[in-house]
Image 1: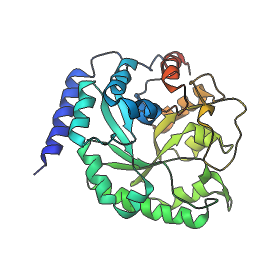
Image 2: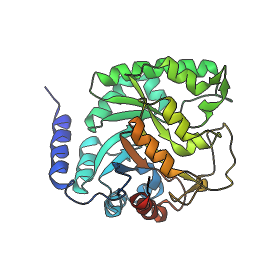
Image 3: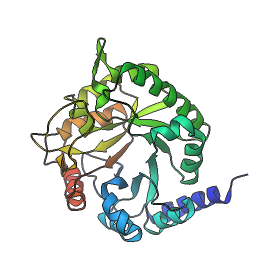
Image 4: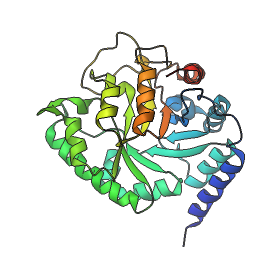
Length: 288
């Protein structure tokens, strides 16, 4: 028997379907069809000050879907109610590597309570330079997470963060991670910024592992941004989509062809709230 929390999640999801899907989808156009959502981490500073007001602003931008990075100390039921009252649906969420490593069943419980379709990890804890041993250990953690989450009808994914592209053998540590993870249990989210940051080509990686990528972070990069394998960069190197260095027509066309299912704008910059409307307009107008 389902818990009251799960019944609430189902009821709120139905409410969303009745009230949230009738309006026109922002961020989509003749070429880019989405679906497009917002990674709420983009507005973390605003959420820290005013959760209800910031959630309302997400709705005002025109989004229907969101990706979570926590619930701002709110239990699942009131958080889901807040989403539903703003006609928003949480599709995926990020949880810490340590939770997947030490308490994956709690991740599954939280993700299920929130009605998530996907639960992912955006950073593999490591010391110094990310290495082969840490890659192999992460693969074991991810395979186990994928198995546990699948039992709850949730798909696990890993979000690229740059340091995985260090050379290894005839390829990179990211190639090793892909080889060591079960294609059915472990999918991937391409953060375009964090593929370009270590000097890689998003189109080539989408093509190389077609079928493994199911989600994408649509994030542009300021011209002149330093490239390295740290997985770290000044947040203000994130810029409005379409004003940076990314070849979005090629990236988005390839993403559609290889089966990416969900797209989320993530803008970590201080100007995120100002950038988001322009990013949506760019996606509406882009041609490919």
